[in-house]
Image (cartoon, rainbow, N blue to C red):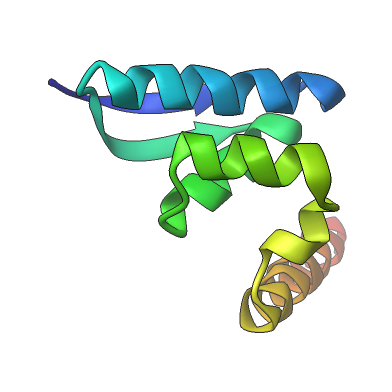
Length: 93
């Protein structure tokens, strides 16, 4: 079965989303896309990068989230953040 995974925000609930993702994978559910807000967006992003639910869960328990991301993806984060702010300020004029 294929479906989309969408996770809401909620701070520490992010680890629960990783567990839900792990359970879905154990049931053979395949995801064709991911989305989320706040902590849910972090889980969705890591899933897009190829992390499995079990990997995300174990890493969230022992590491800081920043340690999960490759440096090249951090550059992408900052670029997207910068461009969204530029677009916001351009829309004000």
